[in-house]
Length: 117
Image (cartoon, rainbow, N blue to C red; front, side, top):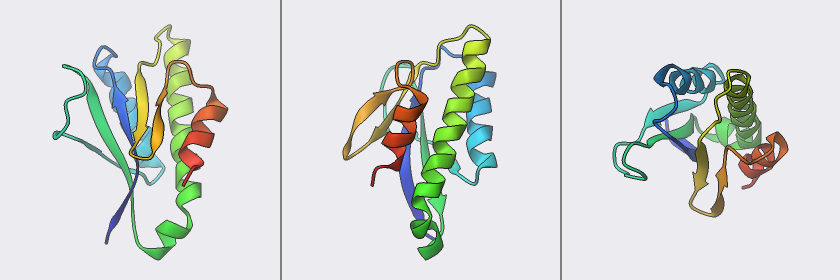
């Protein structure tokens, strides 16, 4: 099966490791494959996740649905961090879209960014 990349999620390693793991778990619970990207150095300590959907035609047809799942998982994660007094430090990246800062973007901006083709 082929993998369809959705985006890269760059997270600051200054965040507690269990909070980074929580984001990874949330994404995986929503059928999003997440793998750490060892091939890219963003900042000395940044952690890069590549979020993909595994599948063929069905996954392609439901790409917006998967994008919304990713947005909801990220927004839930940001809310939980803020409830603990932690600012979510990270970005969403894609080759054809401008980078989106997770600490300043609204929930709606994240959903819109991820829903773009």
